[in-house]
Length: 362
Image 1 (cartoon, one colour):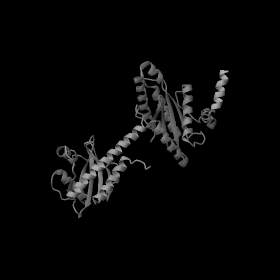
Image 2: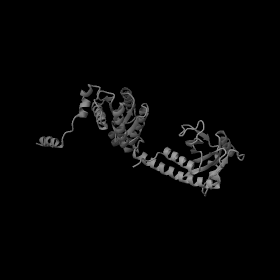
Image 3: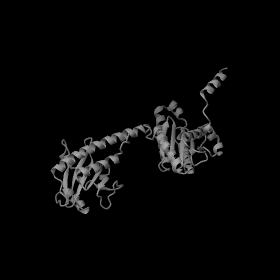
Image 4: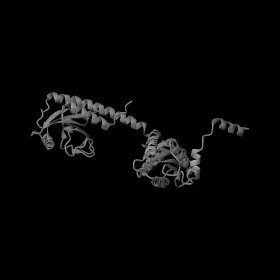
């Protein structure tokens, strides 16, 4: 099955389709960022002029320079279907049209058709298609077609946004807003594959929040949830020191940081800061923290599962020792480190467990 499109891929495909359908030379889609009072360009397709990137990082225009989306929509289109309109390089009408005319001339374009994009009954942005100077000016049929294309584009954007929201929820812990265990599993598998192919350093920090049960039992689960949220914020803050790190709640009182690229020593420094900050929280009893990194002498890491076992074993040792600092797999003897040996210990067969249990019973 083909992967779902991202919102940016959706608007890119929409702009490309509108460019062909309206026989233009250039097309763009912009979003109205109300909080910033600007139209930000998401994609430029076709014959771009100087300074126009396909997916620009910072191309925007004050909405008061092109106010149709904010004013005309609410005054003229309320209760009706928003329609496209045409501007030409020779327009001498209202100020907004003169500005578009100047922008057309500056880029060697002769005319454009602009269609509003409306999502959930609100102006979302605009679809813009231009033709070069000397080409036929868009007519009434083109205006009708652009209006339909904008409606179809808006429907596609809305569907993509819904899918993105579903995906976000599927990979997000609802209480803390951090990533969840599913997100960690996916990212860790990809990271270990990169480690095997490119040698990139992959590090995992596993944390167990101390004292959560006591807080729940004595102060109530609402206060316990506040502790989880507070620690989640601290984890996110510390993780920001590792570029691209994933901060996650694995479930219950377990959290983790996944870092791909930074050196092992850098990850350990961040884990130490995490321990210090957790100990300073007004609730709880600090955190037990274990670190496993392919940058340390832990032997070959051929699976995500092994790295997880190593970090988990280090965290288990930190918790047992009530360590104020992180325990790091492999730093107390390489592959002979008790943490590494515990993580790599073969699982006890079920039959053997039963024999042990029966022997104790006897």
